[in-house]
Length: 430
Image 1: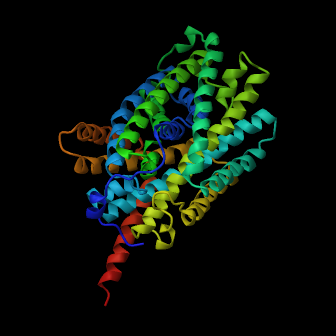
Image 2: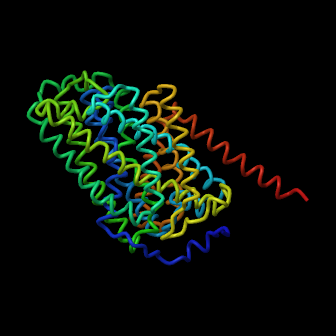
Image 3: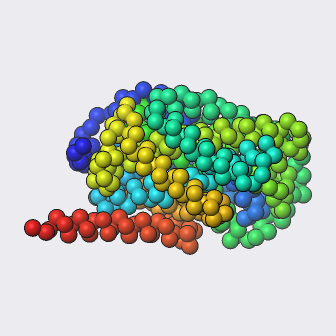
């Protein structure tokens, strides 16, 4: 497949896919709300105590202009390359390659976390030994990869039901645990100081990340410019309310000491529903995990196909990247990357927080580059342009917070630059 020039993409009319607003909203909710609700409330309390509620509010406010900018870009340039395409149009091939590698190989560190969370919850509900967590987790990855082979037409329909269950379980958990809230648990509010709040903010970037994944499947939407904007509004409203309520209840029930296990939702539900609750939450958690992977596998695959199309990966992976097709060759690459990361994670017994912070550092790097591209691409002085300007400042601040976890994004950036140097050297050879 030949490389698509910036001019050709600019002149491409809006793509008319088959996914409407309900399914688009379901995909957005699953990508953003996702598995964060399974672990972040507990990690947030560990990092900042009651001030973790403030951290949630801060990240929510930061996410609004960011999500709005991504919606404006995806509606204007619907392409499987997502943020990498935006960056290519604004900043050139090297920056696009860098951005694509950050999402594909950096954000991919989140996959073992998602798989491990599913394994934790299902193993806890079934009373299995810890050794089964890895087996169950890899099983989730395999199932999501298999579902991805059928394309978004099938997986998108499945996602509508999965997201409905996702919202229902959050409401049920909050309602069941609310009577156990103790006002005394909200003090001291800053047990670990503002440093703890900063760490919690870095962790909760995971909670509101995911909008960039939708940009990789925007070309599958019916009337992308309108659909993705309203899907973003619906998704951010649901996600913001869910996290604020869940964090408030988690702090009110457990206080500064936090939850008792790696499955905080089970701890919350077990307070008033000790028999039925944990099993129910674990069952729904497995659906949540599958739902999140069901969004990210097509996003990764579409990106890999577009990187192959543009010469940033071998062109063999480009087949199937167009709207309505299934990039099965790219899914093979995604399977190798994700299962490889999961193998390292489980084999060495690494901590969830380590992979979460690598994931979020890669995400923030990608966000910053995408917002710089948006300032150049969107009409100056428009609402979208102003949101992009604000987001550049906000994402730069997030980069500062994540500075000691930027090793992987920096390594991927160096690889992208090295590829450019090698290609230019070969082009100059007689």
